[in-house]
Structures are given as C-alpha cells and as structure tokens.
Image (cartoon, rainbow, N blue to C red):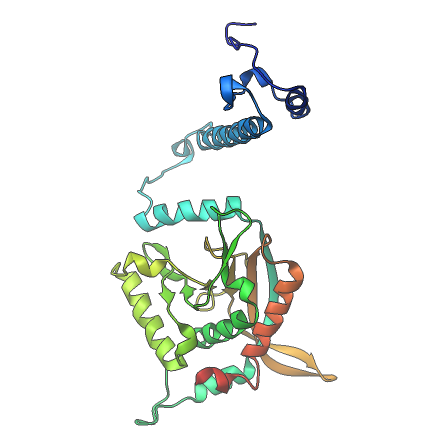
Length: 309
C-alpha cells in the first residue's frame, strides 16, 4: 500500500465483497457499521452515495472557480457594479431549479378574440366608466380553472420523502413582477374565490409593493403555479424557468392580430402566445398538451363571461 492507502482488511461476507467489486468499490475504504466494523451492502450503498455527492460538490466548486483568461478592461472602458440584492437572492433559486428540474417547454397559441372584446366592454355599474382590467386577470382565472382539471400541475415533489408528491388544494398564483431591483414573484391568494375585478385590484397592489420593496417575504412563497408575462414589453415564445418548488410555469407573450384559417376561410383573430414549462418528472408531454388545450378553451369564446364572475 502507498502512504495514502493505510486501510486495514475489513470484515465482510463473500456476497458483500462481490457486490463491492461489481460497483467498482474498494471495500477496504468502506466503513462498516455492523459489529466489529463488519461491512454490509447498506454500507457500500451509503459509501457510493456519499462519494457521488462529494464528486458533484467538487465539480460545482471547480465550475465556480473558472476564471476568464483576460480582463474586460483590456478591450475598452468598463464599469463594475454590485448585482442588485433581489437578483442575488433569486439567482440561487434559479440555479437550483435549472440544475435539478428536467425542464420541457410546450409552445402554443390561444385565440383570445372574444375574451378581449368582453374585457374591453366592461363598465362600472355605478359610474358607467370603462373598467381598466388587464388581460392578466383573465389569464389567472383561466389558469386556475385548468389547474382544477389537471391537479398534477398544482403540486410539488417532496425532496425529503422520496417518491412522494404534494397535491395542493389551494390556488395561489405567482405573478412575475419586473422591478428595477430585479424580478419578484408575489402570490395572488385563493384565486378560485375571487372575481376578475378583485384579482385586477390585487395585481396592482402587489406590483406596487414589489416595486417599492414593501412586499412581505412570506408573500413570495407558497404558490401553486407562476405566470410570467412579456406582453407589455414584446416578444412571443420563450422558455421560462420553473419557480421551485412548483412543477410548472406559464409564459405569456405579446398578443397579435393574425389571419387564422377557420372552417374553410381565413379570419382576423387575436392570438396569445403561450409557453408552458413543466417538470418532466411529474408531467409528461401528452398531459402538458392537454393542459394547454384546456387553457386555450378557458381563454376562448363561451368562457370569458364565466371567468368574470
């Protein structure tokens, strides 16, 4: 043995020694937890598991230590600034989500022509003035209707109890709010019990609190599913990152008027881009497609009025 291999011959049965050889494990390096240090299959499995975790940690640390072979200042004028605190905090969650969740994104379009006609026709029953309700309030309500039919989307994987998942009976929808400090995701609670007007009011209130950094930290946790919208900025399809520990996120693009072929002819319709990212450990492609179809139905004609009440 070399200086680094000062291990004694351990006690183990022939079956356990064979098991170690099959896994490529030096049994002399395994700590036995049985009487007199006898090694069992469980000890070998624990050794392999710990070794795998150590290798992963080393790999992550090495990746973090990668440095550029040059200085940015070599190529021109630069400015060094601190990363905003909100982005520093969210980056940990984003890295965890992207690294540990197998993301798949399903892209589709919803016909929201009737929904938009209904939305823009809403007026206050007392003043007669038009109500300023954003499409997002309708989308939130439609999403909850879809979650009721597809409960897997309103779940989380239990990272402690392996092989378990938590199905949520509440409907708290996260809304990605763009602020000068970074992205924040407060929750609109119990959407299933609220009408469109109330949801619209809460959206405005939550957005203001986020932008003024007056949001309670607890309001950023405990969601069913998140919606992130680029509708007010521009763009169509993208790949949103799931907001851990949720298992899905809905990305909304900017709606556009398009010529759509319906019943043998082209008609002018308002189409909304949908980008649904989901955790493939819980949701498969077929279920995601059915969910999108249900969501499109909920955003389409014959449903807008029901969403408003």
